Amino acid sequence: MRWEGPAGYWASDDASLLDVDKVHGWLSRESYWAAGRSRDVMARSIEHSLVLGLYGPDSEQAGFARMVTDRATFAWLCDVFVAAEHRAKGVGTFLVRTAVEHPDVIGIRQLLMATPGRSLYRRHGFADLLRPERWMERPGSVTNGEGAMQIADGEVARPITDGSGRNAGLEQLGATSGQP
Image 1 (tube, rainbow, N blue to C red):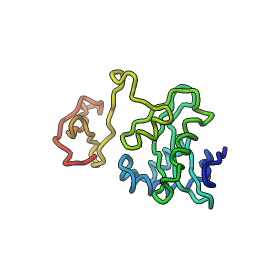
Image 2: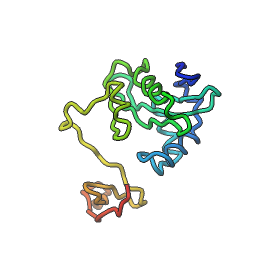
Image 3: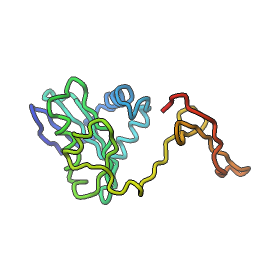
Image 4: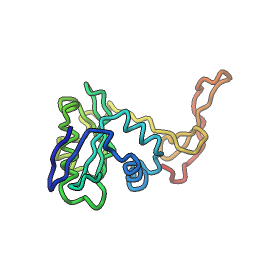
């Protein structure tokens, strides 16, 4: 589906139009939340999500947004990115509005965890969690090749397995030295 936006910009949910290399470059090099994300992980995330490309009047890709969703009960808006040369033209607002009003997710609960851009997202109905005490986080692994994961306050732990290979707990390893 295609949506017309401001100043000749347009958005599409046709994943075949996306320049995955460009999206990967933006997110892995220019965003704080996906810094260092591999191209393979980016490609798999696109394959398994509802994605929107933002395109300029010349049809060159100018931005990207992704919804992780089952299209029935839950949608998480993430990886929203507009290339620097296309910002301050209202296209970020257009991209977010198009994402949250997409026919596949419009009537379901949507979440977004973001610090920068809060006013942009609030304009589209996002607010603080109503019941944050009901939410927990399971941090992803630290990419140190040893199966370690970041736990509270920058500490790192590695899974301990018993003799059969089953998880038997965590061995605390110390601080991450500033790693994400």
